[in-house]
Image (cartoon, rainbow, N blue to C red; front, side, top):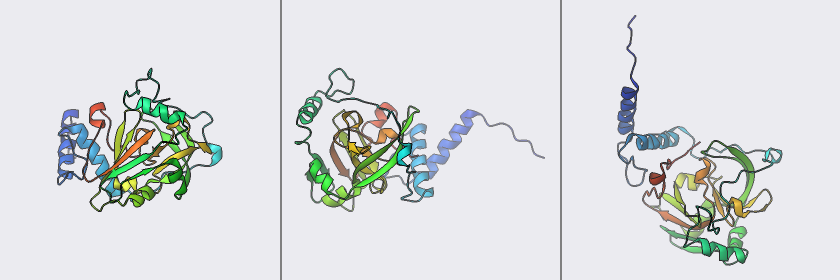
Length: 252
């Protein structure tokens, strides 16, 4: 019997990096790049493995109404509060004015690689076909909570603005200084919705009023709150993740 010597951690990591590099050859601007180091190679390897091995539109688990968490967890409170770290000097006051009018003047801008850029009010979105789902929000910090979400499927909004065939990614921009994006496969997923309702009521401020994304196949930080603008684009842009160390793709 042949005895194999143990593999050092350094050798193991180096081997994984080499394997990832080989697996990711051919990556273009229409795919998340590696950023030239091992951790980002791992991000992209996870992304490509999920896309290769999982059904394109496999659904996240949905729960019964009795499973809804009694005290839903809250990550942020109000982007108009100047005492909060999420306060943005440009958009915080704008959000405050919109809130004062119960968001009657709010519009979701949708632009980029589309044939009909648009600005949608809450009433516009509520006139579109809606979807209600009870799902688990899994936070990267380790907690989770189950809630009922009601909103318009993102794919319906993309159809309304006429997404161009070259489009590959959808970027979300918010009133609380965040920006992030998903690929077109997640954008067209039936459970990816723009939620304006939670647990049978209008979406509360603490959970992202007037509109938030729900990307049920990824960790919670991909479901951005306080939406103000959506940009459809042909090319990958990591926006904020490379600065804060988070993965661009956080599939679960």
